[in-house]
Length: 428
Image (cartoon, rainbow, N blue to C red):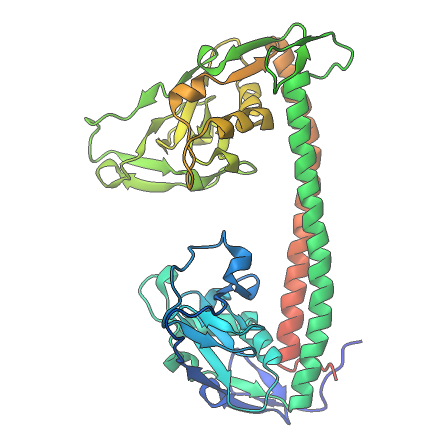
């Protein structure tokens, strides 16, 4: 049963509303001081960063998120219990309590308590939805994604000051509740990954072995592919499709308006999910590839990310980055089957093996065209497509249901945090 405090009083602050009568209000600058303590040269302190989803963590644990600093000379010293604020992304939740001693970029602000408080409580209220909205209002900048929250504005925000024992009780309550919710969400996300693996396995098996387990098999002649149905064919990609048939030339009208698709706009799960509009003269120099309805686009850069998609009628007018290869299958192919075949692990693994480069491995069109694929007659392709789409639909629905559940849990968690830190519910 939800408990309330005995009496409330108006905080006079719209986003905070009524607070328990015995709580105080103080500006952030009277609770925390802005610390600018520089690290010494050639130091070996732990490099810390703050992330919107997980708060403050050592960078070495998350090397794939952002660039690695070459030196931490003159970075800000961070002590365990400090609050670290990313000025640029504070309004999106990039603020959190550090459980580590270390250093952080001068692009961040370090706040250190000057009152006897439980900083865990303030970590929760700093990351609550109401506070983030207030952070956004007080951030400066002409573009949303360039908004910055400076301490002279952050320091003016009034926050509640419950008695310390209540701060501790609220933090303990939220630690326990949030851990329970987070653990359940983690298990649900793991289940989603298993379902995605099941879907991928379903596609891989269907496009390399077919649907009839009793069919007679033959050696494909390709070591990594093994046996395939006896009546299937094996050919190089360049013999079964045209690669990069159409490209915008240098004589293209500079005022032509294009809808441009880059590598980051395409994902294995969602296909083409974003575009950018340009006049050709202002578009990226790599905006060249043209695809038509029924083609398949495949990233030739970092193909392990599986930026591969079928070009349906909705996206057939787009212009694609030269980081894609545009594949137009020949007439003896079902176009949807062709895309499933290109999406399969056995093909993308070939691409990865034959890609060159370290940071951004890529494959050129010639090497891509020399990769092998196996395929059945067109009528069987149609049957396989119908099977994959039917079974994939079931898996997609299950994933969507779990994602909806996760969203509700995240909303519940945020609501619980907001209610507890503002005194709308009593946890002591």
